[in-house]
Length: 53
Image (cartoon, rainbow, N blue to C red):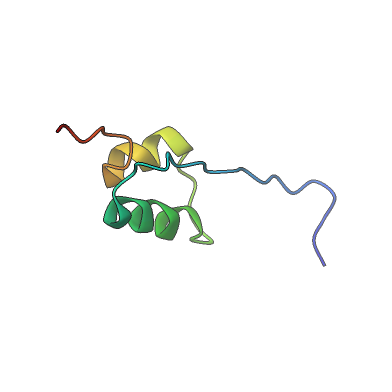
């Protein structure tokens, strides 16, 4: 049973995020011991970078 003071965050990736970066970001985000904010997850996984071309 979860407590009434649990905090949940939503990580939203752009539809044009490369699949490998999206998988890495989601894998990091769901770790039970993850304390990183979304912006840091994007930096760590490269999922916030735009692809040129």
